[in-house]
Image (cartoon, rainbow, N blue to C red; front, side, top):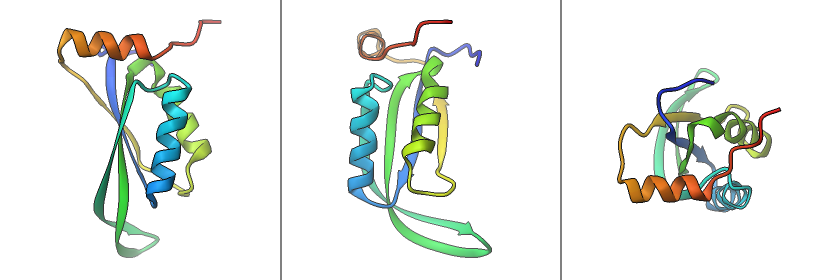
Length: 112
């Protein structure tokens, strides 16, 4: 996955705070994310032909863009939704101190 951006924010929603907390812990412990923020939100969406409105929990996952495939795969493996929202937004700028910390707290797997 080539990108001109080094870092990104991955957005994911879950049905419960417990699910959000578990996903966040797993990603940070695996060094796939430097930081995960969790927020309660209200979502309105169309699913299987019907409009739904639900309370959910949104995770903002700060990571390296190079780790997105691993983050995506882990989220799909661990997530309770049939089709979880997993999107990455590039970080186009940031303080050098924060981005340095983000880089130090995440690990890119060795190339094969």
